[in-house]
Image 1: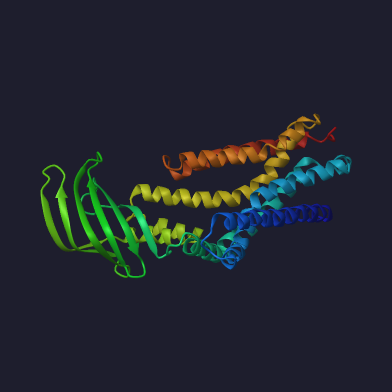
Image 2: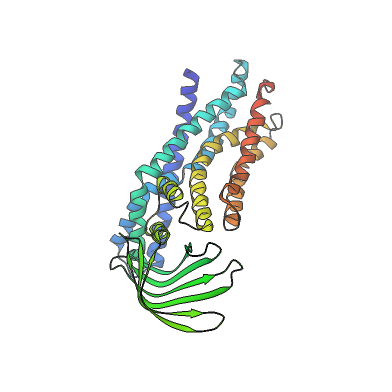
Length: 359
């Protein structure tokens, strides 16, 4: 227990110093990038944005800081001959595996609480400030948005909605088009209106005037005072207004199970899994780095090459997720991490055999 606390203290010291350094470095670069690229704002606005962004940036660097801290910690153990001393004291690699596991669990818990409970509000404020001051448009105005909606009249059909502008403050929008498609994604009819209104309390979309066009015949019909009660429309808008928490994503998945189209539900599930994966990386980095180091215990060169591969493995997994997120179901995104976890579990079973000191 005393040895575990001693090692944990050294590991967390490395982690804290690295994470603070990366946080200030990235925000330092961000500061000068904003000064060079953005000419229409003041110095005070840039400083204010950096201050808002600092807390979320601190927790965003947790994964890479875990990896670097693990590398430096193992390097220090080897350089100070503590690695061999552990074997002389009959402290096998399985106990070290458990130590890295608990340190990863602690940091993953801090990451989850920090990102989902502490800094989520400041992240939304920073995003709002960036849009209003740097991009010079209101966060309350949504531009050129596509929304996929369920068609309650015919289950076999698809309903797509596009609008050019929606002012959430005035609950008024311009240039909306509703596109009805059959199961073969052939357009059956469209409804166009230059002005529309929303009633968030009633979850209703209201068109005062518009034109309905049937695709096959081309017949145009004027419509007046058309109401659409579509809760899923407002559920999807809410995701654009602010960064949702994991709790909100889960709530939308549960409540939207019967009102959201499958493609939207898959997108929400993918967003949820990506948020969870960020915290999972904090847990996996120390374990994966440690286990890769043990693959070639008697080769002084190879083991130091292997210790650097943890970051590329996780990065490639994220690239796989980003490439497949639009074409696959949400749970499929966990496949790379499933293989990483299997690798860690298999190696853990063989750690009892690795009792000799590393040469």
